[in-house]
Image (cartoon, rainbow, N blue to C red):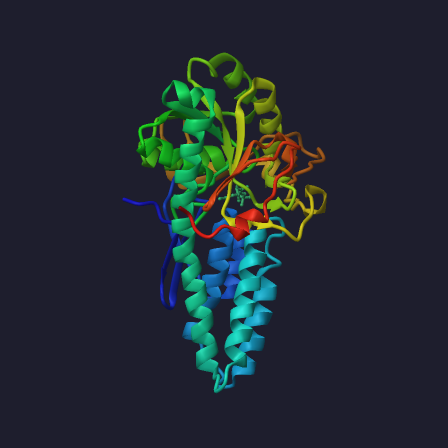
Length: 383
Ligand code: MRU
């Protein structure tokens, strides 16, 4: 069975509640943009592409099921207000702002057409939002293929035989419309027989690695091992050779024009480790994550989340032998009263990144150490 974080048919949207994973697989109905805003803020749905698609489709569902004005301009105003509101849910991932910008343009163009009506504007919006769901899956499959081919060709490990890779956070089917970005690269290595082993880091404090990536790897029966974030250096030093580790592959929430990349907190430390150990550090992301309007990482707004995500852990009751899925407990793991800093993302400087894997190919730096990411938008297709 294929893992599906987003289930959509016209007029109906459900999301897999990622706060309950890996212990329970429960879907929540999303009826409106307000529902989506809360689901994104509370991280019931997360991951840069998934956030954008859920927001876009939630408004499509709301528009499909509501009694709409017949006046095109009134529907246009309604859509734009909702898009502006959805964008406020989480600040760092650019995919949501990118999707909102494109949907705004579609709406304005539809409303400006000769003979436009409320219905025609709605139809244009809904179709464009639905297309985003379709495009994301095919983009991810292409990212996976380009990334896997690049790793096999361009790494010492790849030339020797099946490689191992370390990944961070969750970038798989749960973070996208399907297949995933960095985890898509690992899926593609696996399906082409080029993967020896996948390692995933726990990803404190929210544990997207242990809860979600580990869940996807087990689900797909990909040979994989979980490590805590603090074990990555030891993994590269002690098992890098025996496991034939080619490198580290991560996703992105926003890639600035110069290649600086905001991604889940802990990514920056992994990039430093990769450099020290002489293995590749790769970012896998669709072009919707590249933000040419942001010149460098210094301009990226980093979301700070509540301290309780660091001090409290939540899970089903465990008596040492059995799990009781019916009882979810919250346990404090820090001294009461301690101050907490909880940035959800960090920025990895471009100088530490060997390649940016997109659906149209892998972008590397020139001889002077500079990425030219505008070329990603000039590229025609994926082949
Ligand atoms: O806070 P999250 O879980 O939304 O953070 C997710 C990440 O940082 C991912 O690496 C990124 O969004 C890419 S997902 C394809």
